[in-house]
Image (tube, rainbow, N blue to C red):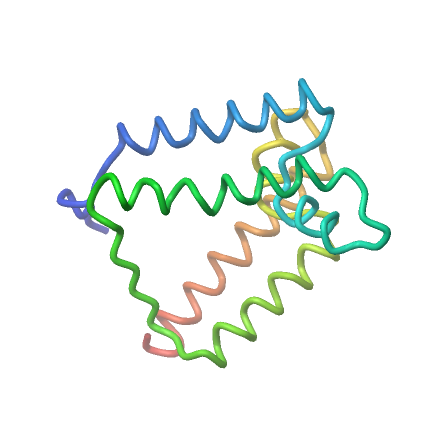
Length: 144
């Protein structure tokens, strides 16, 4: 395994992690809610809608921050080596998984683990194992 030193940014990654942790802490301390993206978005889609202001604000900030960052600096070049069909199937499977796990990686991995939730530990280990297995199958068994 090699590290791509041209794109290795531990300082920026640390700052990003601290900002994610701070945002999760602010949300739980001031509103009493967990910063799980699937739950935040799901709450906006459920009828009747309640507490939409903070949910919409959170999602607008999550989408708007990278847009603003790209205007201030060089925009990130995103390369996705998959077709629309694969992307739609993957998105569906991720959505299905978040419903079965009662949360997503941000809810369980960031917020649940920091609260010492055993359920979140099991969910996060499952997410990670599925990711490792997917990469192994893709790279070593399918030749990708």
